[in-house]
Image 1 (cartoon, rainbow, N blue to C red):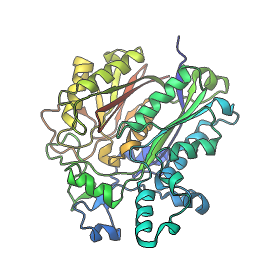
Image 2 (cartoon, rainbow, N blue to C red; image 1 turned 180 degrees about the vertical axis):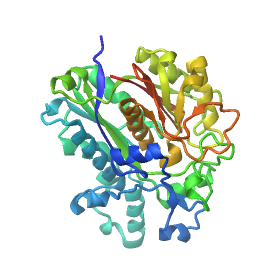
Image 3 (tube, helix red, strand yellow; image 1 turned 90 degrees about the vertical axis):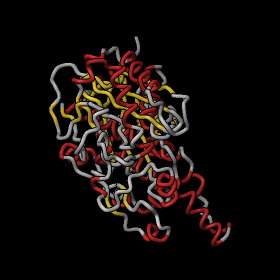
Length: 411
């Protein structure tokens, strides 16, 4: 029988909190993280979207000046979240050869890459920093976390667009189940609030254009949703084999009972309109978790607030859960945090773990007029979850047709 895998540490830096306690308190309250951008480049490039959801606590407030200087912002966020998760786990003694890392990103070091390009064009090759490549490479966050913790059982980097953070948990689970590691620090990081990605996402009509009302711009399931809000940050979770955690008397948030990854093979950006790939992922995650649809009480949905994205997820939930879908409390926390791209799945996994542990579902904000074609039981103010054994799902879907789902069980 496969080894049980449990979650013993949580960390995050997000637009609604620079650590997990703050983020979770604000997620229950329904705090919006989106704000008008005050950077000079917004006006310089005449960007059509002038707001985003920046981290509430700059990484420079947490890291030393020397550390921050040698890291892209995405790596800075990863290290901040991973250090919190590691401290939260309470691990004091570990076999570093049995400690692994799986830390994802969707885009990687875009700030470093494009700043270096500007330097090359304006000042020449001698002025390009020697640390440019280590800072821009997508595996930079995983490498930095591995170095920081002395993790030698592998440092992996899933890159699957907005499914990346959830795929990191899928990989971490498999590393422990297979016996290749006892502990894996998993997560996702992203720092793409930069003029080029902002312009590109706006050009493809993916971003909300509610420049006059940023805090109400992300509105999953609302009839008037018009796109997502760009966010940034990182989430991190410490996974352990149950035996390893029990041997040291660890506090356990939840069991990572099942995961699944599928592909739509449908379109490079649009989801399968019938949600077939997502349906397969949901069913496979439940099967992996040895769970039934009736066990599911809460879903942290992908729910980006795009006109075409929210409906296929509902179709998938209905197909996978059947009539039980009417009894499931659904939270769309991107309404608060914005869309953290490759970090979103990890941050939402942290929220799902807290939902299991705290027995509460966080709020979905800005739902004024629910789309009648998406008749989910959406949590618009924090709600208590039932006692006893429960299962909570967290979904992530990304450009390229990537689908990733995790199933958490109470312990």
